[in-house]
Length: 191
Image 1 (cartoon, rainbow, N blue to C red):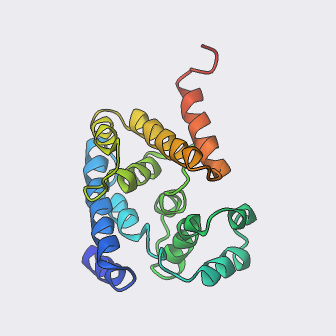
Image 2 (cartoon, one colour; image 1 turned 45 degrees about the horizontal axis):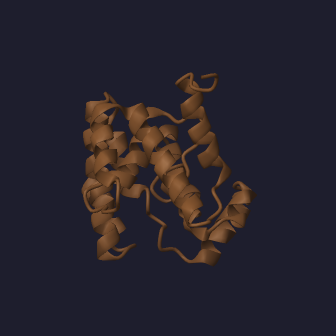
Image 3 (tube, rainbow, N blue to C red; image 1 turned 60 degrees about the vertical axis):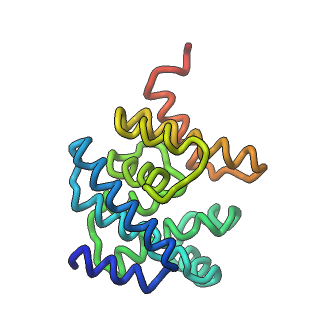
């Protein structure tokens, strides 16, 4: 399926503002993939499809999580997280995406996880820094993304976790595992 066809399908699934975000994520992902030597087509596909079921009904999302035996812990957290793993399932079943790296990038674009691939990091970061995003600190995250993928990923997951903690919201375990993994890979544990 051509990229424009995928984008057209996303347009019918989401409000205009989210469609602009989706295009921004895809373009940012292409840019970062080029910069860090990753496959730009995979980055574009994952960027386009990452929010494919963001506006699906909560009960439908819940039913897919249960019927497909996804991590039941998801149901203990805000339904805002559900669209990522269900979106990965939809990418595979509806859009016939078979590339596991693309599917994982979609699945973990909201929480991150330990052991993320470069493409997973690119989609996570792109979702946070694409041009229509506007929040305190986004410009610094954009600067970091231009210099070092690992540093940008660490800063993005740290921003997300801190934001949730400050709002007194629960943090999905994968996000903590992602943060810890990135810190441990830097050798900061014993300092």
